[in-house]
Length: 104
Image 1: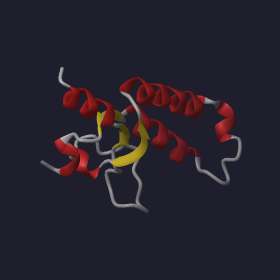
Image 2: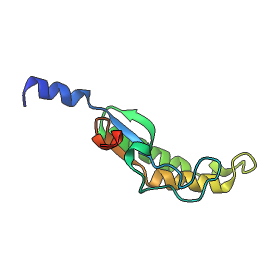
Image 3: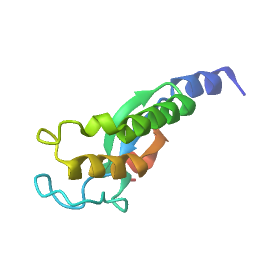
Image 4: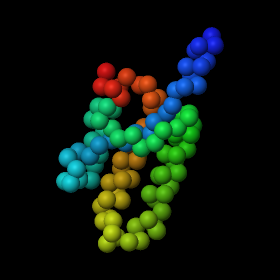
């Protein structure tokens, strides 16, 4: 590996992305659109490496499984937490220079 290749590898960041809803905002269904192109997915965080991204994905998953998260259902409806879990379950960690993020 040349010096330039090594430097390029260090500059690559990883993104945690989640799929968009099946329908436009305001009319949420209980499933995310996992077939949407990655260019339509939402960036949920930027990380220095794949392992950092996957670790955050796991941390968020554990958070959403915590029953105390649903303690105030009047403020956040129960279906919304289910929807958030489904989006996170379908999430991906991808390199920030992945051409699919630009719709290529």
